Length: 106
Image: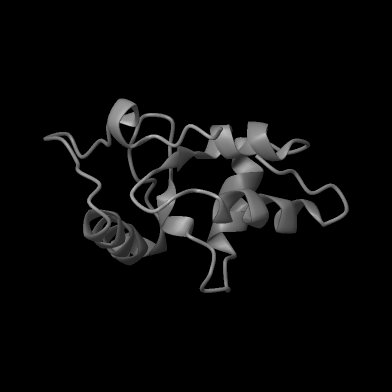
């Protein structure tokens, strides 16, 4: 996993997020740890501020394997649709199994 130190923390979070492969997910906390120098909450704020289309914000979920509510529900519904289009499956409690779909960088 490459880590870029000379960018702003938000840009570093985005660079880490861009590395999440199609059909995989990562938690806010995982991205914070991988990015370094930030918290899960900071990752959440960065995801809420995404404007670039090349940042796969929809692949970031909470530590419980669930989509965190946002956008008055519209953003959450869109996130679920995008994940399902990538083959990510949800259980009866709307959770994603990290063992099947979690991103484990090399």
